[in-house]
Every structure is written in C-alpha cells, then in structure tokens.
Image (cartoon, rainbow, N blue to C red; front, side, top):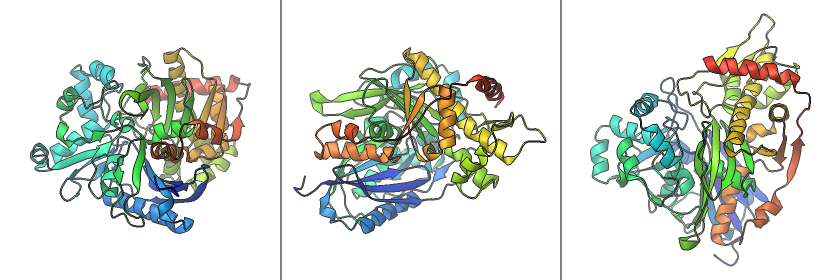
Length: 499
C-alpha cells in the first residue's frame, strides 16, 4: 500500500441503482453518489438488467464521487465491492460481450425447472450440500436457461470461450479490463454450485444443474486481492480491488454483527434477515437458508463465518409498486405520512407475493394479495397494510430463526433505505416484541465492503475499528400492548395460505 493511501472507494451495485462511496480511515463518508438504471420486464415473472446500463451506472457513480471529493486518486488504498446477489450473466471471454441480459434474483422463469428437480428427489441432497433450496432465486438455473436459449451457447461453453458469474464477478472483469475472473465465498454460496464446507465448485451440482465448470470463476477469500483497475473511466490504473461480499453479508459485516447470535435486517428492494451463527453451519428445519457470511484470512489462517438467512422478495419494491403501478403517491417516502394518517389498516391485509414468496414459505408461484377490502377502505389503509405486510414477513423469518437456533431474539439491527421509515420500524418492533437499533449510517452494505477492502489492504488491522465506529441513531422499543396484533397475525396467516 502506498504510504499516503488512506481512503477506500466502495461500489454498492444494487438491484435498482449503483452507489459509490469514498470513506476515510475514520470511516467518515467523504463523498457519495447514486445512479439508477432501468429494469426490464419482458414477460410476467421475468426481470432482467442490461449489463451495459448496469456498468454505465457504476462508472457514472464512481466518476461523480471522484469529482465531488476532489481527492488525489493516489490516496485510494483499495476498492471494495458489494453487489446484488444471485443475479447472474454469461459473457464472451474474448470480447466481453454478454450473451443475454443478466437474469435478476427476482426472476422466476426457471420455477418449473426447480419444481422438476424437486419432484425428482434432489432437494434434500442439494440442501445438505449447499444450504439452499431448489428455487429460481438462485443463480445456477438462470445460467442453464441462458445456455439453453442462446443459439450456440453450450458449444461455446464447452470450447471454453465463455465466462459466467454473479455481478461482483462481472464488475471485477470490467474493472480489470478482463484480466480477472474471480469471486468470493459469500457470492459463490448463492449459486447452488458451491458447498458450504469445501474449497471448490461442486462437480456433482454442476452436472445436476447443467452448468459447465469451465464457466465459473476462481474463488478467493473476501479480503483477498482480486485484481487492479485498468481503463476505468475516472480512475487511475493500478488501484487494488481488495474486498468483496454479497450485499446482505456485507450489511451484516457493516453492522458489526461479528458474534454468533447477532442479527440484522436490511430493508431494500427486498428485505433480508441474517443471523451470525459462527464457525459452524446451522442447518434449518424451518425453511431458512444456511449460507456463508464471509471468509477472512488465507491458507491455514483462513476462517469462514456462517449465517442463517431469510429473504422477503418484496419490501421497498411494494412501495415502488404503490407509487408507480397504482399512483398512490409521488415519492416513496410519502408512504409514511399516508399510512400514519390512519390508526390501523382497517382489516386490510397485503401479502407482498408479487415475485413469489421466499423463506420460510418457498412458493415461487405465489402472487401478491390484498384481502379485507370494504367500502370504507382508503389508500391510507392499503398503504399501512403494505408496511405491515413487509414487517409480518420479517417476523415470520425471525421466529423461524429462533426456532432453529433455540435462542430467542434479543434485538435487531436495521438498515437499508426503508429503515428510515419510522412507522415501519415501529410496526416491526411491535410485531417482534424486541427493540430495533438503527445506526446513524444506513449505508451499512457499502460500509461492509469498505471495511473488508480496508482489512485486505492493511488500512485497519482488525475489526475493532468498525465496532467502535458503529453509532446508534434511534432505538425503537416494542409496544407492550400486543392484543391488537393477534388479529393481524391471524389474518396474515390466512392470507398467506391463499396467496
């Protein structure tokens, strides 16, 4: 590391936009920029991203941060990446041209493929090996779909002329000018092709899910050196890429949840709960996922941390739907005042199953549902029911985690854009019956990438700096009056059963 290098540049590549952050050694944000990019919905249940539009949003965000900060680029010690997980694509090794748009984690087109694999009796073995369920959420069946639907793709894969990966892998490829085809265990563990315990892609899973091993990237620990920048607009060549983790694992790291039993929920496009379970994987009997949180160190000192995870596919996306699809309000933040204008949802229940239901239900063919409508129902009641629907999904997940670990939840750290909604946070605390802790910095996903990169580059020697830097913004205490929630929970259970 250069003697004067004391800054970390982080790229947080999300589902609807890309954010760049520049952070100093004291974990202060010097500059931030976000650039949205288009979503493509060619058919019901299909969700795609154009790789060039995605890459353009990253470049624009990085360039904006460098302009705003006016720092000497030689001060950047490392670049860190965190990314939407499961979203994947295939491209030509020679030209870098994508074969197809990226298939997004929300995409459900391979639901029938997953159902056929389940019916053939493969799910138990897959779950034991990977910690995941056979669901179109994950990457492998998406990659197989592209190989099956792009003319000549399987022949090209056999010839070794194609590369595949999740978005982190694609970004490193572009950032290094095609020099590095790499990933790390937190992203690899979301593909259905990486074993929870082991150091290489599973040949059996590659064969079962029809993804040639030759397509897949090299896997390195999260703080490894993944490559150096080359020909990136707005950046000099030679900046080391030193820290990568999938967005939810990065958020857990950024929330300083380093010890077993510590949990966070990120409220973004979807909502994602992760619980640190320590050095050994905990297999769920309640529909949750077992996944790799992060892997630090190298060689004999390499250590893996595992997590239980549950995902709600629609959280902030429900608010976007009310805004864009139904025209309830002009800005997503307006939902809080609208929902708070009524004291309850008036018996309305909204199940956010628009993209199917994830853990603990795992019903890819489920659909969104609004029940309990009367002549007296207003937009405000539906808006409040939408917030309750998000919170009820998270409650289901955390109750399942408590059952799997046989350890009650004591508190929950929250982050993501929708965590700024005080009404949603209070509803969540009431439903869980525990306090919620919201930090002063909601950019915890990017902060996790910053810290992993800084650890890899030697800016920080250990994790104590991040724990010391974590600051509480607001704590939401649970309302002790719970009687009105029992009817809501019962109505929710009925509605979910028919969604």
